[in-house]
Length: 464
Image (cartoon, rainbow, N blue to C red; front, side, top):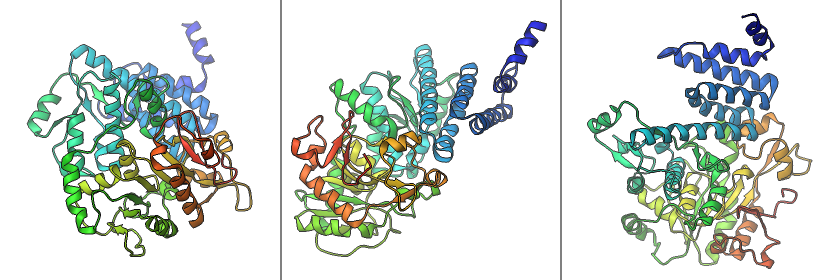
């Protein structure tokens, strides 16, 4: 007994707190919630006092000793990325979370031979999350990581951010619409659970879709699998084309889909740097139209009006079937604008994209030409390079709150920057953005391509 007390006394404070939080007995009900809150508080406290490395050790110990603590890590991930601002810690949390979740799911599937229940239904309310997370299930299935078609409980289709995506969901999930059938499925003693917020493909490819898409694309290529997850259905094409005929967009017209993120749809202080002034895109719109390329703008009714002209179709204030936005993002010459929900549609349907003021550089995807968002320590200092941002642990952090706390000043792309990026995209050729490992010599002065076939513009001096 004396020996045990001596060993306990030698334990670091955080290890003692872990033991105290876990306790010696199983808890249920409200006690579990209370214990999870205590555990989260301990990790955050350790993060503030002892830094990232020690906080990770606490999170790892808690999860290893009591795997049900894993659900708490989703909240910790958001806090780490959006408030504290640590790419490294966010990645390690994502690894622990996604691997533990997959292990729990696989174990129950193996034991009970029953399909997993999809548990992150909140994704259905955000078009980008819905498309990206569903694509993650497609890829996991293609790679043989899912043995059964996951079950999706969907009693109300009105909650879908884009109702026209329902047939694509139906291809990927076993959808249960009837409450009685859902209750019968849930009545099983133990149901495997599939969490698509953060997925684990292997020990190198895991986490949120925004972070795993680039390495996953390489894995798919190595396995001879397509880089895109979805193909447009005839039903989507028919509804969209019938509607767009009224706006003089013919089936053989060359067009670009424009979406510039503004306030009024999903607003939070962390997303401020993702918004932009659409007037800065006017010269680019004019140039595309002069080249015989139509520009179709999508978005919500609160967006800023732009100049009316032939060849420019602004649908932001037009009520339209949901099939229209799917079609415009999945059948264009290229997607043009800021990274937002519609971009995910373009990416997952295999279309090239020109992304302006892209942030952060560490989550850039292939099949895109990126003009990265620039930051400096003050308005007179030089633009920070990717290497410097990585040293500051910001390579996968997009929260504007974090950049402000670090005293960094954002530099938005100018009207000329955007037009020059368009000129570069036209010179490269949108379809060439989709071609892997091909970079003609003449294009090397325009862009740089990393190991995951992610393309960045060289336009902003100092960024690379």
